[in-house]
Length: 300
Image (spheres, rainbow, N blue to C red):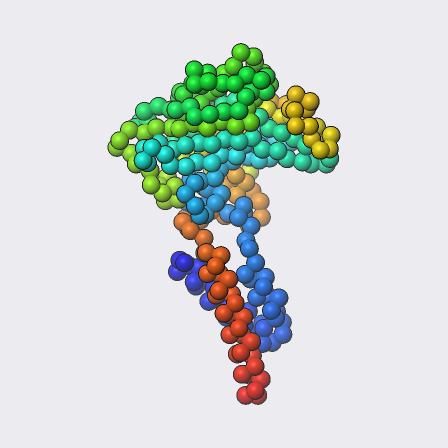
């Protein structure tokens, strides 16, 4: 556990012990202090990961342009992990589903552009797998193009990213939409990734248009998003039964990094306090508090 976490526990415990003895907060106050914290309220490290522990860095495309912002995000989830003995990063993209006002929305995508560190040392990309596209075609490696900057609408003013991945197919439009895509970005032997919470592999490269909405300082990723909807409950498993609503673009960082939301923040803490440690210390403080209060009353 970090020193910062220990100091927080000591400070919080001291305050709540006073409340416990005075009857102001009681055990309810201690229970509240050690309740789980919403993991989605804070981003971690230089890459703005949504998680604070584990080996992977979780990101999202959750900031929509004017075409898709009326529909609830996030739109695409991105899980980044280390591969190839640290010389590659694997990006696992999955489409998201949201429900609002009795309507369920499903988001598809067909490309993504990224701002990556050490871009001059990137040697290429490797297609791993994908879902079938909305038109029923199964993409193969020859359908996947690894390139440089591409047009992601307002995210970058027509030229976004150091690297991009574009998936094509025999049909256009909504038919290109995917629900999943996995690929590697490869660096040469001079670059080795070992910790995604301390090594910066993404940066806020774009400060154009949509990347400055709500106080955002820039975007690290953007992608082309298709919006499907249905009012049927439960939603049909066959996406061809859904309505084709809109197409647009989604970007990262999330609301906290943009300066939106209440209580949002970014921290360089590389590991959150372990739940077991919190539970043990919380229980210890409760026990100590009860003993301390009884002792005070006895002495009085």
